[in-house]
Length: 265
Length: 221
Figure 1 (spheres, each protein chain N blue to C red):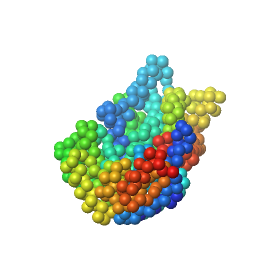
Figure 2: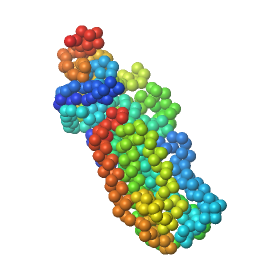
Figure 3: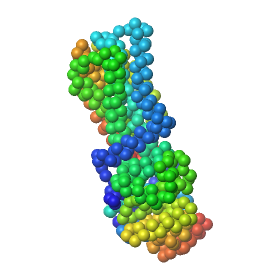
Figure 4: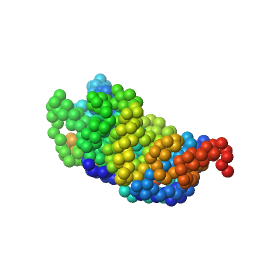
């Protein structure tokens, strides 16, 4: 037996600890039965189906030459990945606060939640596009690495803003309640059912500041040979991510403790 | 080895900052058995959390060398929808313990029978306490921590817990905080009273308890 204790707790990058935190997080989600975890994947699929029906019903066609389900899915995925990552990281902090005495630090829990959400994002991506390919026929991917980069970019955005939301939620109950409300408008402004090329000024100028819209534009550029976004600017999501990360570290250091008196380290 | 130097901890309260610990100094050697007695809400658990590293002092320093355990019998982290064995496997991995050994050790020690492989939501409070206490004895820290709990379960199981703890303490130290003199006398050789945020060293557990009583009756200047 290795005589480890919290002080000898292994660094998080050693797989067993990260894996244990992720498995535990999955079980926390299973608390309401297996359906509660299935909902992680079913909810975006249902939203996409609903939007596809809405497009058909309104007689709307996508601004680029692709089928409606694929267009809606490519807009919905960045938004869903971002939102689920932010929500999951805040929730993981509450669920794992009792593991601190075993050596699970604030950052361990956040990293485990972030990696789990990245894995979920990959599963969701594969699930949705393989389903679309099976039902409506396969669409060739124009630039797979660009598409993968877009998923990575939105995961980075989710992790950065998720970390900020988790830190703010730990130091303020008001922030904890406000963050889910603040995320809601993103559905309408993140390119779920439009592309940036459709936007007129000044709307395009305003939405240029939305980093998720840039990730969505990059994903569509990577997926479809009929679309090459001129709106996409890598600086926006990168600077937004770094800004959110830096702010979260600043708040974490300035506050020192959460509202339960636990160290934010 | 644990060294506290001028450790101060202040908790926020509706009436403003409330000092919990005030310039506390303490040395705990690798084989010391240190017991602290204090009244309810006097800062005993805060002291344990600071030593365990779950809280940081507002002022002063805490140095820890060697492996420090987590409070004995702590049931935090046991997930009701996992089986006892699954909980032990995951918690052991998080704590950096050998998960296979932990599952085997707790299965053998906790006396849960077939319930060990059933979800913890079916456990009685006593069974949950036995699982938690057995898990806290998986590791072999240089210094054990105890926040009131020094054993668990029914009389037979308590004797078993204390016997194993005695064995483990042959090669390790103990830092115990409690409201009761019995466990202090049974397990400790150095005694302190925690009074108004200060640690006062005493010759015996009885003397420490008397100091607490005196303070509560308003007799301590």
